[in-house]
Image (cartoon, rainbow, N blue to C red; front, side):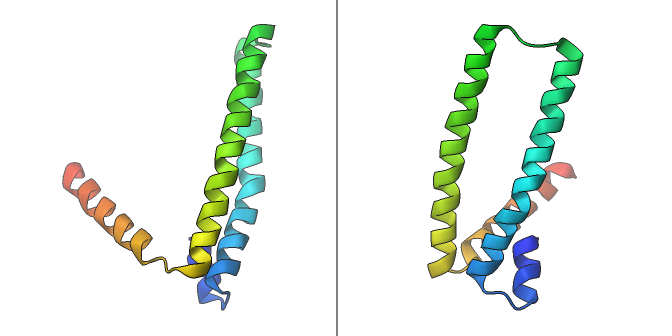
Length: 100
């Protein structure tokens, strides 16, 4: 939605995608922080051996996200959003077929 709004506002595809990802960073950090603190409140501090799993999961997720976002921003600079639009339309049709 933010990419589309940026493009309607006159931004290029690339600038709109950059803006969208930058806008998502604080939101994702806040959501992760809230979830983490709720978990701490509900179950207390996890044992020491679980911290290593948490750190490993965080590191793998961060590296994967970096490369996926880098690829997507490169893709957006050279190609259109048409494949993503058709994908969303198809997914919406399938979803509506299952809802009814």
